[in-house]
Amino acid sequence: MNFLMSLITNLISGLSLGSIYALIALGYTMVYGIAKMLNFAHGDIIMVGAFAVIVSVTSLGLPPVAAILISVVVCVVLGVAIERIAYKPLREASPLAVLITAIGVSYFLQSLALIIFGSNQYSFPKIMTFSSITLGGLTLNGETLTTLIVTTILMIALSLFIGKTRIGKAMRAVSEDKGAAELMGISVNKTIAVTFAIGSALAAVAGLFYGTTYGFINPYTGAMPGIKAFVAAVFGGIGSIPGAMLGGILLGVIENLSKAYISTELSDAIVFAVLIIVLIVRPIGLLGKKTNEKV
Amino acid sequence: MNQVKMVPYPSHSIIPERDEGHAVLQARELGIDFGGLTAVDDFTLTIGRTEIAGLIGPNGAGKTTVFNLLTNVYQPTRGSILIDGKNTVGKSTYQVNKLGVARTFQNIRLFANMSVLDNVKTGLHNGIQTSLLSSVLHTPGFKKAEKEANERVMELLDVFHMGYMANYPAGSLPYGAQRRLEIVRALATQPKILLLDEPAAGMNPSETAELMETIHQIRDTFQIAIMLIEHDMNLVMGICEGICVLNYGKIIAKGTPDEIKNNPLVIEAYLGKGKGGNTNAASE
Image (cartoon, rainbow over all chains, first blue to last red; front, top):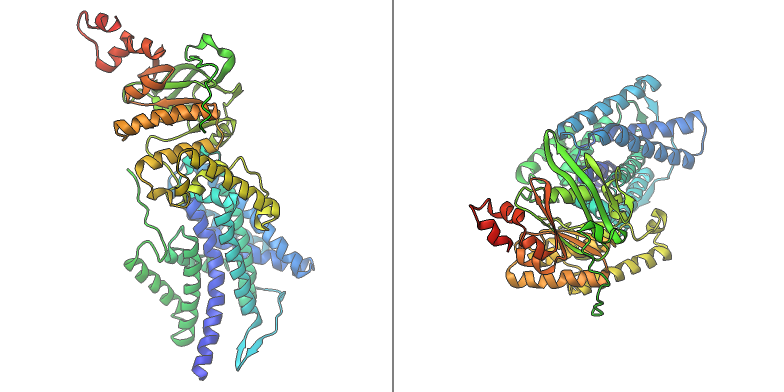
């Protein structure tokens, strides 16, 4: 009975961690689907978002809601600016050049944060305090539940947005055929900018939850969740939105269960080993679509 | 659909001096170089408001390049393009589409994973204006705009007898239906001129005959100009009011189908130089 309780608790915190990965993975997968590039600077957006919250609350003394809004706005502006300045001029360049640029932007953001904030750990302000809920002997952490609920709502909203709206349709059209979409009157540049904006806004929310979960932020904070979210996106099938959600959640659950029952040190190794196995068995990822290139 | 009106003027403005005033498209001395290679040069052409015009020429003559220039997929090295009197130089492709140029492709380029309905709706992209907020919040305004868009798409699909396919994925349609769907999607952008790149490619004679009917219907129903690239001479000679012949990137002849059929330069471009009296016989 005790084992069952701890299993459920671990599963739920795994789901919560996984939904943070899923939020980040959505940014990777949307940008890949639409701009056909891997935006390795995406993870560092989380760090910037988390620092935006810290500065707003600790230095400026703003209320939590304002801090969250500022964080989202900062990340959206940053994401769109990065696309505009660093990636847009390379639209016709080789994928390798874009990839290297993305890695460069990632280091640029880390170094910039290092100059501004130094290499110290900053403690993340407790802006969300929720009491734990006890359900028949099962104690659930309030923050964990909030993370799970908010990310689920965001993912449903995103699916509706992409499925139902005019801009969502434009995004799907651009992801299938940029040239044809442009000839149908869709601005590819604007669509890509919107994609970066949405991805960065989700990253800001992910930064908030990541900070709340771990309590500490430094300039390198974004790197590891960034890589893991990228793994999640590949795991689920890069370019696929439900794939990113599934991949992120599975990854979080696997990581948390291996931490709890196998070994904390080995948990990351296990996560990456699972990725390797999945890619051997199913190279396009769990929900990836085979692309039939026409010659 | 069936109110087939006769168009006031099959304008023949491929012969420019005839009706400059009614032009929907005017290309002047258009040219493009790729590195040292001149792909298209000195391309001057006027197309009237409801004209059906043909662009023909041997393989590699630069026909698709001309379409890419007219839609600003390529920026011309020289010359100018006016769509309905408005200059398109420096505009991007989607802006040229807004000015009234739509096209289909030689190899079909539908959004294969999207439904037939959604494919056509992307064409309406510029037509429906709903704000981001209203679409996220599903306000009544958004719902109304969505309903109108769906109705407009269904109307268009019904014109081409494709209404029952609305929810099929575009990639699952048979070849002929995919070609028609590309035309419907292009028409949804409410063009003033529709560019068709080899619409009859891969069609059998009866399908081609049906296509000729369809092209006439489009012109009469939507009152727009149509310019097509095509290798099927029966189709070109059968429906085009004006024809422009391209060879090695240059216009070698412009005129009515009869004039083109008998033009010795055209015959030479297609069949090679004859010996002695051959060209005379042809121009008779």
